[in-house]
Amino acid sequence: MKEDALTRLARVVAEDVLEPDPDTLSVLSNAMIDTLGCIHLGARTDLAQKARDAVVEMSAAGTSQVIGTEMQTSRPQAAFLNAVAGHALDFDDWEYPGNTHPTTVLFPALLAVATQETSGPEFAKAYLAGFEVIARIGEGINFEHYNAGWHSTATLGAPGAAAACSRLLGLTAAETAHAMSIAISTASGFACQFGADAKPLQAGFAARAGVEAACLAEAGLAGNSHILDHPRGMAALMGGLVPERLENALQKIGTGYALSEHGLVVKPWPSCGYSQRIMTCATGLSDRVTVDHVAGIDLHLPDFHAAVATYHQPESRSEALFSLPFVAAMGLVHHRLTVADLDSGLWEDDIIRDLIGKTKVHPFAPRRPDLNYAQEDPDRMVVTFTDGNTLEEACIYPLGAPQAPMSSAQIWAKFDANLGPQTEAHASRRVWSAQLQNWTERPSVLSLFTAQGRMQ
Image (cartoon, one colour):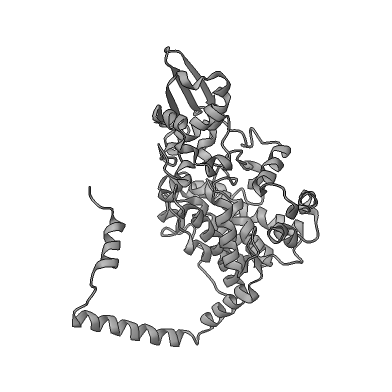
């Protein structure tokens, strides 16, 4: 089998003797000396001084809280760590137009720059600003951007987080544009990392980039404001620029909020967003299915959804999150998929493995490729039994979508379950949860949001 490119490169890096000839060594040596001189020269510029000031401010005292731990660290690293944790199980919310997980990027970034004086209304407004940027850019460049293989949580999340942080820091419009521009220069993340640890790391990179970009802009550093729609800018290079579509999206700014227009998808199950309709189908069928009599399972879903959830028989928890056959089997057998199921490694269970082996995935070209969920393109699950009879279930909007929302009680039950079992050490959890319910009205929210981390 032909080795992949990174394996071949890694072998050279790790195993080659790496002994340059004299001419090459001379070039290398001169490059180091030249760059060392450039660093000394550049260190005296206003640009470098502003950057140092920003880094000092970002790193001062390392008092930003890493939620769920006693750890405190610098602003960018706290944003990174909290975002990674938020996206670790793919259990966090997502939105349609940008195809991103917005809150796991925006919330940690905002926590990192918030102060004890930050009020609930200010925090909410900053989130709204960040979401607006993510969703409107998403409207303007998707689905070409996402389908090209970009992880839009990372690519769109970075300027979104920069915008949110800029709002909370009180930056001017010009400074905010610079922050978003700087963040776009860092925006990267690849969908082919789905099913690996790198996927949540990419969300962390976006949150960190947003914090850093806003702090750099606050210090006076600038980026080109045309980086989004320039012929050689983000939209053009990362999927293809359609000027009319981007303009239509931008014209909505100031006429209404993207969050109001599109809402959020809150997940009832910890797995890829594109597996949630299949799980909805499976739980709808489970009471009518006798597992021993199942001969085959056929899953039908849009091709760009199937292209993301690519693992058939998962071998790890990360892969299980992106395995349509595993999710289908869990829904049929257990009527659920929980974090405890993932911790137990139920993809190795004999019954689940047997059903996975009987499952086929059938991607189809959607009639509305411009929409994530369309009436014309539902997911379908067809279960065939050993006697030849079949059962079928279809789903347009999964549980948790704005069109089929989870109740407030369901969301709080998920929150409480995610905190873990109640113990004596968590005696104040009920008080804390009650305070959280009206966080948008509170005069100070930083300690409220990070309190549970110090209670653990």
